Image 1 (tube, helix red, strand yellow):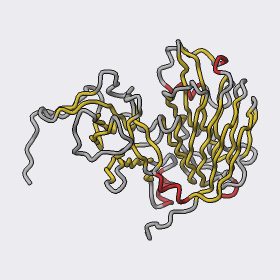
Image 2 (cartoon, rainbow, N blue to C red):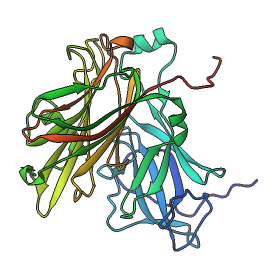
Image 3 (cartoon, rainbow, N blue to C red):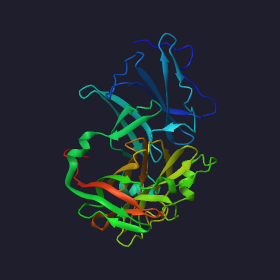
Image 4 (tube, rainbow, N blue to C red):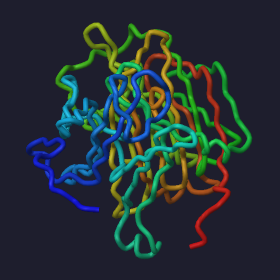
Length: 355
């Protein structure tokens, strides 16, 4: 093999710092399958993803690849840089994808670092984890990707627990009983009876993470905050809320999704960030979904069917093992309905590394 230096980069963006772990691949505009990396054509969009060292987040754009010029051009509506689309709006970095030819799907692997101390890392003997693999598809809108846990994770599910058509009034929290709070898969569909009661959205709210920091799960709103309390102790001294707020902007609703680790642990010298992302979802049916994978020190959450994903690392001291609980809650003034809650305790993988 002989390497030859390219005359120009495939793509570049000024003032974005060092790029790590770049990834470049096609996605189909018409079928719900992944594509081999070499596929070209009019029915194809291309994804260029970079991990930006300055922010420690993974960003991507959708665009067109011109093979004759070996050039990638992002679509005009794509934000190329620090304010752009992300795979995940939480603790997620240095990801890569591959094409699974057996099931015709593209699979994404992401990494989450530790949020506790270096001393704790040394004591554990390891630091950082690979997250649950996710499938990657182009959203029907053509404006973003949709990520979802691979179907194989469902083979680890235990007995299903269900809640149906249960109202959540202001200030209520209901435990999802019959599952392990430290290792669970929880899939919820919320129904919002009256979207007209949504609070007005301020156009200056550009940063969803900062907005989540200001409007945490205890801050009363109209439609929201409502969602899930993961890794919760029985008396709620420790908890990690994953929740939504719905606002009313001009001719549309704005959905904010948050994952807040600020009350996740009494442990000192632990980073407990609040993460947030907007969810570009159609609320004409007045429904909103949330799925969370809970696994001892990590919560991976998927809002709006995987349109917005947020991963948090947490280190509870009380809400561990059998003392960890999972609740659904509503701290908004408007009642929301648990249309459907499906939850499972999760078993350990069938095969693990011996080391």
